[in-house]
Length: 421
Image 1 (cartoon, rainbow, N blue to C red):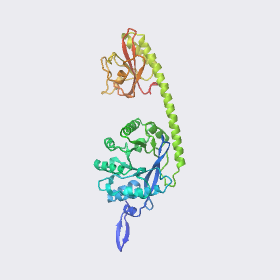
Image 2: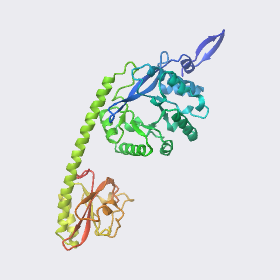
Image 3: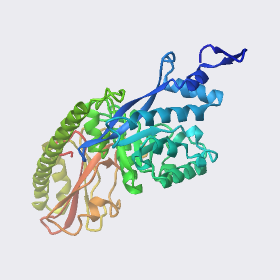
Image 4: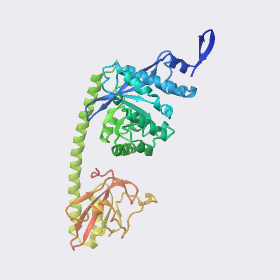
């Protein structure tokens, strides 16, 4: 925290820490970072971020709040930061948009609910509570009951509630579902490199699904580049915030034309990528139809006891097939699971076992979604193969052999297959 300051009060010498001096002198200002909506095609609002003024420039926001918590003046610092944010925002050209302000979860307890300090600060500066978004880091609130009371109290005053840093290490999904915030702000650690990290994509998809289920909008924070922005959009986060949009700036240094230009560029590229992806899906789906028709056409020309010969030929004609197996009309496996020569069965993880003759597949989508007809085929979503534990898709089609037996051909394709989608 640095050395204490010394001050004279009525002839007495008193020591004052740097954080206490910062609070006393209100040496805090706010910078603002825009939040944009791609589907609404506009700037939604701005998040206020606290910064120390001279001579306290060396104090980062983290250091300020850590020192305040250590010295028992966390509430005073938190209120000061909110006051400065509201004052700056209320006199700006953006006062009719949303103001996102952070509220330190460490001050959430039953003693501060009735103070109406935030409500008064907002209304005295000519703003409306319904245009202020209170951001809370859920994981830092120790007492769930106090957090529920706090959110209920401020929501009743008209404020919008956002849970911040969702997807960080300590987010509690059960508490998120209980609290049902208006907004989930996805942590920058999850958004960074999301365009190339499979597990991050899956986590964000799950959070978007959760948000849809509890009625929460999704904002992706920490968007640093175009690729991550487009990936977040494709996964359902239609509101974005981060350096790729604009870095935090003083309220008078904000350049709305640059923000809108960035928003328009992203919207254009997002729209183009959707069109390209749709076209690609159609092409691959058409290729799947043609390939499966060719594959199953061979089965139509052969008898039931010749199925293995047909299967072994298929591997030579198509890339990326992991294995093939055939089911009867009841979903029971008629053949062994036949693997491509590229699959080393010795490396299959012990928990995963290939199906054998008689294995019941009747509860699998690729069986019951397709077992009533012989004209179409079914394609599964990606999943872990029960045979090898690798990601695969299963394509199935019901056919009749030349000697009149109903069977369902199931083909597992790996990610390196041209038919993967």
